[in-house]
Image 1: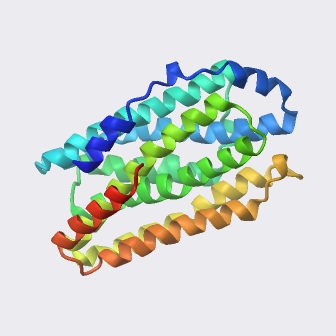
Image 2: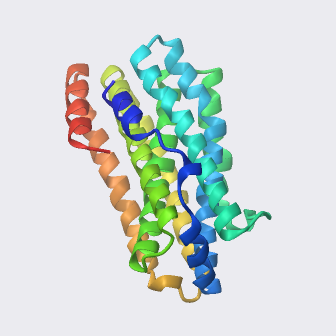
Length: 280
């Protein structure tokens, strides 16, 4: 319910209301390789947000079938927010970049491994198998890898690029909203996995195996994005972002490690403290 309160207070924003006039002017000033990098990042986000919008419903239905009303109430905001993220990036492509063609050439095999294979497989499986093990695999794939590593690293790249040159203020505003939304999603994912671990300690092996199996393709997505350039635009360095991704991975891993052997009471108490301390 704390997350639901935050979603009602911070998650009600409209992509259509964000002013993009300055972004359109800024876009005209960028070099071709700079536009290409921003388009690459945007295409990864647009495809990813669309994928989770399409694939998320089985997780919500699983929690609803278990009669967890408070969790279901919060999860109703997930689909709404992921759909808004899809809307936002589409608006950027249409109005700022003026791109309506196929951008799939920006999506590498590593990207396909996660978004075309692992994510839909794990989430759609819940329609026929809502076991704790299946829930763990779905949440790790969605919350820990897609959101906790790729999305957060993507935001970091966006802000590094745009804030350093004071570019695209409307896009930055939208991404700031997205980041707050995603932080709540990740907080729920950590809670869900911690609750499942408290109830079924044997699931730790599944969590660890799933995270480890998807770590390399996730890092590969980041490496693929930067290796496309002989000289990375905006003076960026690939190692800064792969390092950031590994830091995010370790942070989630350590948090879940602490849930091993914890009681349900401890899980609720720690989760409430973390959410209350985090204004996102």
